[in-house]
Amino acid sequence: MQQTASDFISLLRTRRSVAPRLLTSPAPTPEEIETLLTIAARVPDHARLVPWRFIVIPQAEGRRLGDTIASVFLQDHPDAEAERVTVERERLARAPLVIAVVSRTREHPKAPEWEQILSAGAACMALTVAANAMGYATNWHTEWYAFDRRFLDVLGLAPAERIAGFIHIGTAAEPPAERERPVLSEIVTYYRS
Image (tube, rainbow, N blue to C red; front, side, top):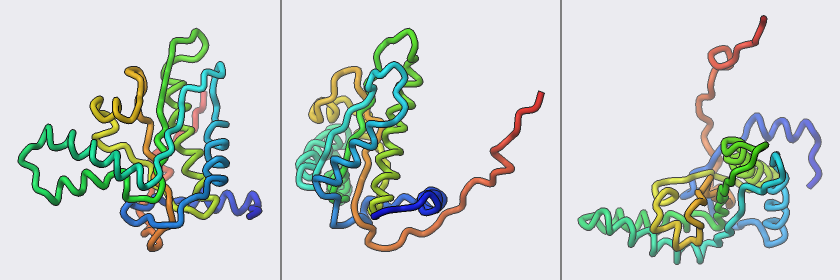
């Protein structure tokens, strides 16, 4: 599908997250996933440190990881109701595809940690917008398990790695409702000396 600059600007102006529970099949094909990851890996990366990596989680694997999420949740909430445990178990299986963007910073004299973290965030946004441009709906989530070392160890993150985002990708089951956006006059100033 070929898009013009005007189409792309329109996409950016109207981009909207879709709740993971409203994402259904189809998901991107393996070839489309490769394209998405290639695009996400082209974000600004001062000093070429590649301060991010990707973990592709198809829905079936998200279900298996859900057992770990539910187990960790129950360790902290042993009296949780069964419905809540089911919600936790489904966290990474709501959408047909989830791609975890892992932030991995290291010391460098020309690329401060903050820049490297922002680069991982840029990878999340590039992945999201690229999937939207392909016609898929997305949602960038973290949620509690993204910060829980017990789960991160199972997912294979090194001790210094963090989740920048879980990008849920699929087809919207219904058009997303628009929400109120910031008023530019309240968030923009023009510097003048």
